[in-house]
Amino acid sequence: MYENTISWLLEDENPSVKYFTLKDLLNKEKEAKEVKKEIPQSKIIKKIFSKQNEEGFWESRENPYIPKYKATYWQIMLLGYLGMDRDDERVRRACEYIFKFQQKEGGFSETGIEKAKKEYEYTKERCLKRGKKPPDETKFVDDLIHQMELSCLTGNTVSALIRIGYKNDKRVLKALRWLADIQNRDGGWLCPYWKAHIRDTHSCFYGTICALGAFSEVKNVFKETIKRGAEFLLMHRLYRADHHNFEVINKKWLELSFPQFYGYDILRGLYVLTKLGIKDERMKDAVKIIKSKEKEGKWILEKTPNGRMHT
View 1 (cartoon, rainbow, N blue to C red):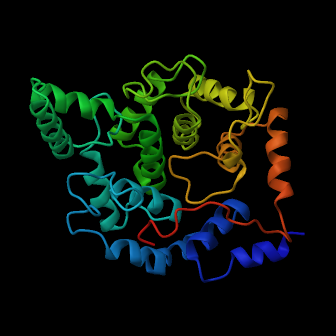
View 2 (tube, helix red, strand yellow; view 1 turned 90 degrees about the vertical axis):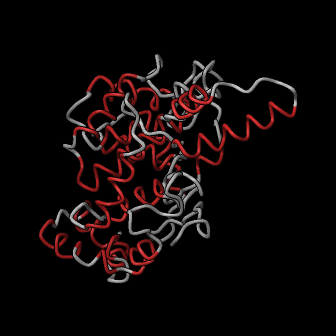
């Protein structure tokens, strides 16, 4: 039934897709390794690196997060998805640049010192205009950087770093331990220091799928963390509100997307759970929805930030 689909995925036009098809679907490791050598020469990879600064970053030296989908964090995620690894010196430079934004607890912050200082100047100006005393600069900067140490960002960054070849790096293990330490009571994840989440008790699907995705890359450790995180998705049937008669939480989650950055959809949920080796009856509804979208062995890409990326 899917012979034509596999043939399509094995076309030479996209070596990244061909590589993962050989490696993950057909278990042809030897052939996959040969195809992987072609990935750096693909159009999409050349375009990404054509925008890279010689110091390793994209767009802004001070801010690896903004502009969204074009700055350095997003390029690291894309490179991980496309099959690049640390053997490439350009990739190593980018990864070492990103590690500068890892915090002492282990997570990665959306905000660097320079961005925080600019935010302080803006806040200071507003305070003075209103006749108020500005906050202490050092405390303001430190608090803002700390507040933006995010579970979703850390999960995505760690997933990419592991795919790229940093699985045994102490800095990556430190980030994984931080994610395990901040796991919410209900098994999912929130961004623990962010003011928008500070009063929340119910976990965020975005934070949860990103964190659990990172653990799916090292599934033989953090077993209790993984078990609790998977149960959070399963008790929601991957897309339903467990405490509101199992109504669909967000219809957008039923749309298939790529690249998968900080957002969530049922395909991403199923991918992470199956990668963790989980088989559960509560996954069936999501599987049925995926199957219902198939047309002649193919699926339509329903959601993508095309036009907002370098590629």
